[in-house]
Image (cartoon, rainbow, N blue to C red; front, side, top):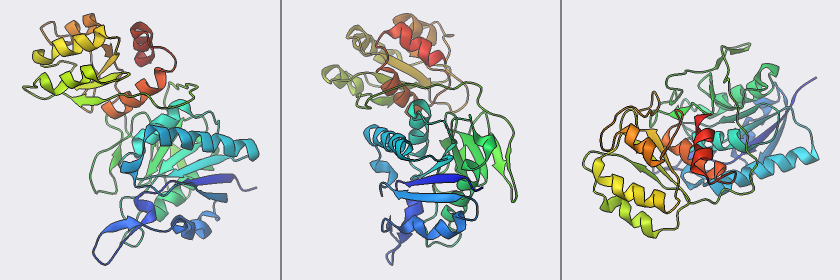
Length: 323
């Protein structure tokens, strides 16, 4: 008996085409439906055209609405798996947000395309077929939200876009793919050990993300003192170190009760409280800055947006980011 798979389309390059001016633009809402006959060889597919957004238009609020729409769909019908098509620029963020918040216990796959639908070598159809196969595979259960691209399966927590145009753009630095897709089978090599889930009602927290660079001027950050922000994420150097000039501004934000999460701008490894000089990681930890456990900046921002609905206590947030 065929597995019943819900495909939710949100837009992106997979639903775009190149016009005569060589510009890439969104197609009509039914663009991905043209692939439906190829999908039905692998599962009983229901196609839902929810959005048709370029991925830079995605927001946490829209991600949360996507979560609500999927959960509502399960209240009316049963599906054995879900595939979500999405633009690649923010795909990893939506995948990770859903990994943290979606309360549906079936395989959930996010996919997209690097080449528009009418380009030679368009990768969207193959990625979508592979995603339906993965969502219909019983071994895909209990893996969290996964990203399928270029015959590889990646965990939402670790995957990131690494190339501006290459079809093999999605990689998991330090961890690698958790599985691969062959002609006749879906093969898993390992799986994430830890899973997190947070029940939320919205995704409206205002959390900026800044990146450390040599010679930062504190004036770049001081305007944040006048803003109504709920938290801040800082991409630090190396193991978790910052220019000393910005430390007083960060201290003022902490004194105002703004939680600050520290990640590394390196894409391998994680921040640690090692260096004991002004701006060094040990001093930052003593200030009360929260150290993240290997997330990149954009994902740490989403996790802070989510976890702020559970607690605003720095110590408790640190425990959640230790996970």
